[in-house]
Length: 231
Image (cartoon, helix red, strand yellow):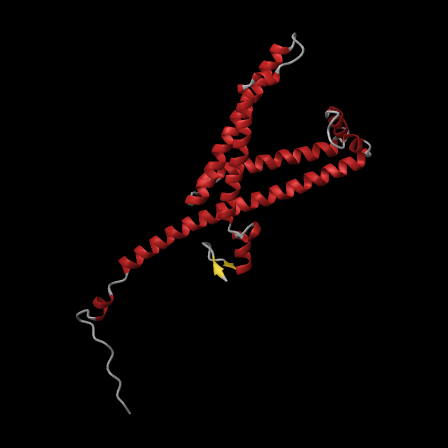
């Protein structure tokens, strides 16, 4: 067993659980992989949005009376989505840099985003439980060529609610696990920084307070213990 900064005993098993994540890799490595993965996803989304904004013909509406207003709404929403994707790339890049360079403060924005995303998904699950009829309304809004739309709509409302809640619960469990990994990475980076400071202070104090070995042995005015007499 080892001790932490508060002189508390930590078992090797607990230490391994707090510093390892999926595939038995370190939480620092897992946070870097997660940050790079999120950056790739948001980069692809940003490229798709920018490509769609550069080609307005694919958003042409058949109704000439509402075309101008809806085109403006579409462009505004896509600009907002592009700004959000760009912000997410920045946040994920900060988390990746913070985990790589052992900068704990750079990981906090990504951790806050994870908490916010988890809260939104939890609200979705609560809204499904409170308003179960919203699932049927959502199915009716799907296009006719959506795969298995008729089979899903034929299920009872209770079965649909249970299936959706099971799916959302799996997503929430996975997101909670990722939040735990990032939090453990933040704790690891913080404790590593504090241990390095304590090591530096302890080394300096030892150097200042303890005299050199030769000076202590050969100091004038100090005699060693008398020799032992052999029997």
